[in-house]
Image (cartoon, rainbow, N blue to C red; front, side, top):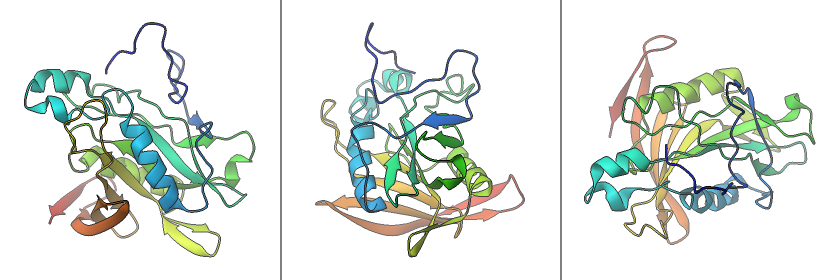
Length: 228
């Protein structure tokens, strides 16, 4: 995990106290929302997350792949729906999964719940697990496994107003080699309710998608992925 500059604390990023096993992440993120639609929230969350230090290391991959791997950082957050019929973003966290650094992989440990003091915990509806992929790669097996675990913990399909939205995991990516201004070029998505993988691409401000694969579950913990 990349280190922050001495004395600098990002107001968007939350970390639990040392030794604390956090079951919830604070929300909402100040000065970000709220949003009437999840599509507007996604469009706003993508550049925010990718603007964080080392959220995209595409510019380093060819020049210094070892450095790219060492500094690459994942940030994750919940996009959730409130009793006021608004979409909100939790704070971000960049705490890696235990052991991921030894495996040479960037990761992010997202608590399963959001602590928004304005509402009873049972009234919050969980929509998207958001994070970034520093190397612009596809969704990993841990991404897919965690998404299914969260769908089982909360709900496969969420009723939001007059519509139904499936819980899913989203991984934003940038293909830009500009280290100072990474662009939001799209995201990968896995939808546990349909076991579908999709790739979304930013086409001048609009999202265009295609099916990217299918997940087949063999049992409660094992699955196979067929990429397209």
